[in-house]
Structure formats: structure tokens, C-alpha cells
Amino acid sequence: MEPTQPENTVPKQARPRRRIGLPKQGKSPAPALPEFPCDARNWKAVLQALIDRNNWKRAANDAVVSNQTRQDRAAFYFYFFRTLRELGVYVDPRYLRETHVRTVAAWWVERGHAPATFQKYLSHLRTFSTWIGKPGMVRCPERYVAFPKTTRRTYVAHHDKGWASNGVDVTQLIDKIRAFDPYVGMQLLVMQTFGLRPKEAIMLRPLQNVVPADSVPAGARSDTHFERATQYLFLERGAKGGRPRWVPIDTPEKERVVALLRLAASHPGAHLSDPGRSLKENRRRFRYVLDRFGVTKSKLGITSYGLRHAFAHAEYEAIAGVPPPVKQVEGNGGASDDTTARADVARQLGHSRTRIANAYVGGTRARATDREPPEGAP
Image (cartoon, rainbow, N blue to C red; front, side, top):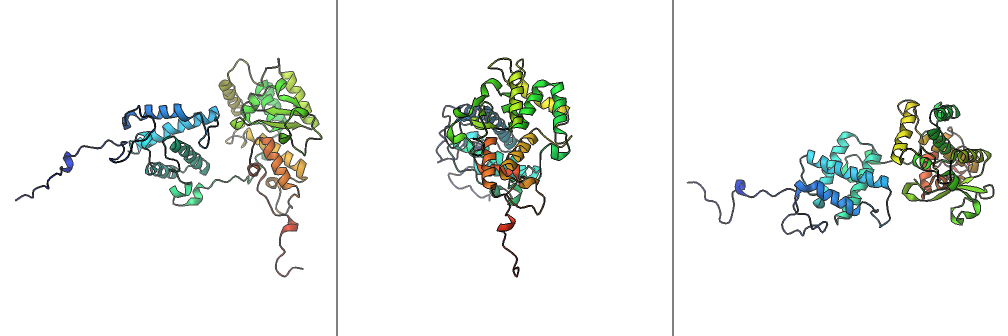
């Protein structure tokens, strides 16, 4: 005699299949986008609506983020949920859970993503979790890997990334590029002289961005340069996060470059790029020209940011009196003005945190006079 089924039960094969992406019974629906029905098949429209509504601001507050950050986030979120689907997980973006993050994080580990990439992805997911009302859902990188060291990102330079240190004649190469494309050549020259980022150099307006020293806010001036600088280069357009900064024009070489910049500008509103191209086209042109002349890691072993690193090294040495740690050979002593030099370098490069200078000049080293003598030494 066949066993009878208990009352009020349904055979497994007859149970209605719960659509993946719907909240479990008893759970309140996510408050985000109530106008959209909960359906994992509609994930693209839901995700785009979340991006349109929230992508303009930072996760911690309502400060406006840069266009580049918005583009990076949007591209990543579509990549993330597309990857989830390829791994067999179909979820409405509003009902993302940490288990889903773990699934994709495990796939990233298998792919061998660099620590910087891994941390950047998790940072984007932390922001996204606040959009769907789940702040704190995404944990630290160490929680998603078997070996935590594989996700630790270092912010300390271990080798010199400057062009000259990599066997490149900087002046000769920039002159060749200027002959081929005067706009890109001048952009590289201003990066070398003032430590600008590529986008800042492209958007620089020479006749508007050179300002007298007395117009610079007291808190933005560098005490180490104030007596020598009568003019400053004001940077805001194209700056990371839109943070303004003032770089002192305090050497004959900087004054010479400023004179060249003024000659290159045809009118007060002219910027340091081809006026016949859009910003996007000028940035693409910048990358093309550098690739043509071998300014890549795979060809000459350098990038445009090597000019920014060399600027940081020169500024550090001008204040500290010794080369930065990343350029020192073993046995060299530290600088007594190391802290002051790092703070000034960070300020001139447009960073609010002094420790970011480590990524350019290297980590701190104990001076020989500060080291404890070995046991038994006189």
C-alpha cells in the first residue's frame, strides 16, 4: 500500500516556483523604486532607475561626485549584475544580498584581480548598498578571500616611476611630442612642471588660472613657498573631486613655462587643448599620441603619471634637502623635515591626506640617529 501524503502539503514538483529576486515571505519589500514590480527579468530597467536617482552623490553625504566617478560606477554595476546572471544567479538589484557579493567576489579571486581593483569594486558595492537601504552589507575585503594578504593594497611607492629614472631623456621626448602635436606637448610640459593630472592639463586655461599670491586663501598657501612665490597656478577644472588647489610659481623654470603657456593661449578663455575637439576627443588624442611615442608600461616602461611622480620628488627634495626615500639607496639617512615635505607634496598634488604622499615619495624611514643601537654597542 502506497503511503498517503499528509494533509495540507503539496508535492515538491507541484509547488509554485519562487521567482529568484523576489523577497521571501514575511520580509517587507525594499523601499527603493516602489513603482517597479519586483521581477528579476526587469533588472536592467531597475538598475538604471537606481543609477539615475542616486549616482550623482557620494555614499557618505550628498556631495556631488565627478562625471568620471558616475561613469565608472554605472559601468561597474551593469558588469556586476551581468556577472551574477552568468554565474546562474538571477536577482532584482533591489534585493541584493551579501551572499551574492560573496559569489562574485569568489569569481574575482579566481580571475586574479589586483588588490586595488578588488577594493574599488567593493567600494562601489558599498555605495550601492546604501541606495537599496542596506548600509553595512558589504564587508571588508578580507572577509571574501581565503588569504587576506591578496587583497591588501599598498599606498607606498617601492620604485621610482619618473621618466628619467627609467632611462628616458625627458626634454628630448617632450620636444618630439610637441613637434608632432603642440597641444599634447604643452600638456606634458605643464604636467612635468606643476605635477598636474592629464585631465587637469587638458582643461587648463593659462590666462585665467595664473593668479597673484595675495588672492590665494591663507589656508591654501604653502608656508615653504609663500615668500618666494608672487603668483600661483589655480586648479579646479578637471581636478579630482573638484577640489581646488594652488600650486606656487616659485622658480625660474616655472615662470618660463608659464610664459610659454600664455603665448599658447589665443584668448582669455582658451584652454590647453585643441579647440576643435571635445574634452572626450582631446583625452583620446592625448592617449593616442603617448602610445605613438611609446609612453606606455609595455613599451618604454613609463606612463604620463611618471611626470607627476618626478614633480613630487623634486618638491620633496627642495624642502627636505635630501632625495625622497623611493630614490635613496640603502644606508641613506632620513630627512629632518620629512613630515613638512610630505604635507607640502600632498597639498600641491591635490590630496587632502598627507599619507597619500607615500605613493609618490615612498614610505618613511627611521633616521640613523633615531635608531636604537644594538645591544652591547657603546
